[in-house]
Image 1 (tube, rainbow over the protein chains, first blue to last red):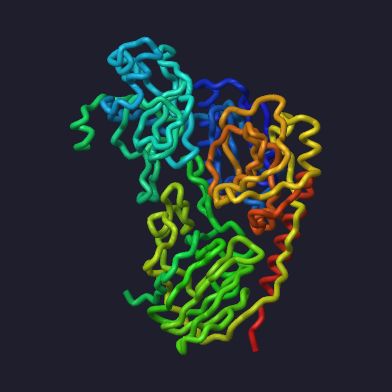
Image 2 (cartoon, chains in turn green, cyan):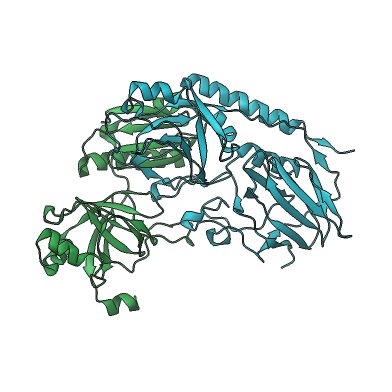
Length: 225
Length: 319
């Protein structure tokens, strides 16, 4: 199932599922991720400290005091990949979005030669898949966008993008959980909190493998949210 | 509350609660954080006879000035740190690292500077009273996660700790922290992205540690490393100690609070046994890299563990 298995330093390994990025490849990464998480929780494998899925790879960190590279590689090689299933309910989220903040919609409309309303309607029709979460806490990398909305990154990234901003670049869509610098084209803003630093049991709303649809709300609804 | 506490009269530059780190959340974008210099962290707890992974206060460069407002405390400061204790008569007593002190209510600790290291630790017998988040009290400032709302310590904060009997004798340990310039690494997954000349140079030249260095990463300055394949890779999970090389060819070593996912090629990884040695190096100093094999790195780690246990076993009473 995976194409390569490499050591990363002396306390991690990475499973590489090949160069392509699509749902099938990513869902295999995520299946392996949930499987390892479960095995780790039930103590069938010891010493794994973190597991990080990305588009086409799974990084597995371990504690050198409890295990080593050889043992982890042996464990991964013993997994029956054909028998892996997504042992977890995939959540389908509908997140409110307000398109009335006007940060990039006008520019996008010019660059794409599409009316703003058309851009909004295409964006609302898309069902996004969460490939991975990361970079900063709670930040989802989602796809795939309708090719009609493909855009490059901004030439000069913004110093400040407001929290909740929904951005698009190429076939990907993301949501900025915090105010931060950013180079994505901002299409709208969601009032939903993606990350709750008070809730230790469930700090992050979305999980890798979930799907997200957007529901349009007005600025008034946004402010009252 | 019947708890004892210090009041913060000066917070220092970068003072946070830390422990062993927070694991199992990297898939949500949360890096482990935790104490940067693990040897000195473990030693601080060992001296005050805490659990070895009890939360401590970590400081860098300039530490805090704390006044003990309620109760008495047994403390230990580890690292290579200059500090004073200001007693009830108003006298300033030079503090010594790697030993315990019994502080009385009204006394102050003034942690002036970390000398030949970057990070220092303050442990208190009985441990600090801080809120746990996902099995850890480590602070990840960038994500606002951990005790104190995920923030650095600030002026007038109360540093609360558990009541503990401090009548026991004071303890100390003699250690001679090594400073080395040669840090051992294992080749990274994109080692082949760099030109033959740059690969050779990487293991022969000195790199200077720049001031753009914090808990997230350490930026180095040296001959630009030439990438002959691609300066971007598909974003993938990052492990602590990764040496990534962005388009300008100047390496960045990712440290405890690293972003969880990144798209720069990685030329090498710092071995676990040398991570603390790297962390002790200050901006402005230089370092070089030595390439070793995985088996050697694992052996070096085991040897290092033995050394830490020996140091902890050598803790003695002060006569």
